[in-house]
Length: 176
Picture 1 (cartoon, rainbow, N blue to C red):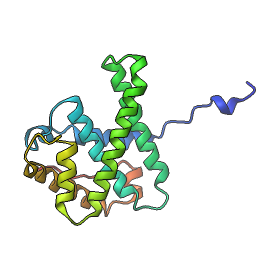
Picture 2: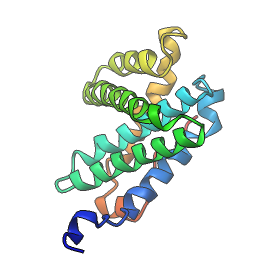
Picture 3: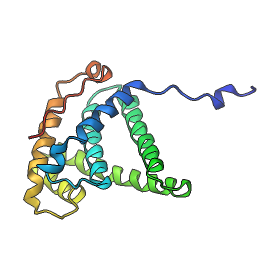
């Protein structure tokens, strides 16, 4: 082959795959859909995955040299979204547009949650969750419990190291 490098696929990032699998497992905990009142729908599950990815990215952004892992995690998430949409029967012609819409939703949520996590004002996070996770369907106070969990999860990630993350040890904590 004349240009083998052009056609060589990069090996999968198993660290990102492992982290993403942990995120999906955490996001699927029934307590989010029962106690916290997140809609147990495709959108609700997407929102919980996005929320956990953003919390981990928020932590990774505090590390020098974590940009490659952060990008690999993002890529893993959207590779999974693409596969999931195909399994749900979304046509090939619609996949690109649907994934693009999901990526825009991710970017908006990422910006909102990241800013809210940087703010000492708990209401900023509550409002961001109320708007994005609950879509305004519950009283604003309803987002307070989820905001408390998110703050606690972000705090639990702070002492965790890059070695922990590379080894697939991400401890968000048990939502209650």
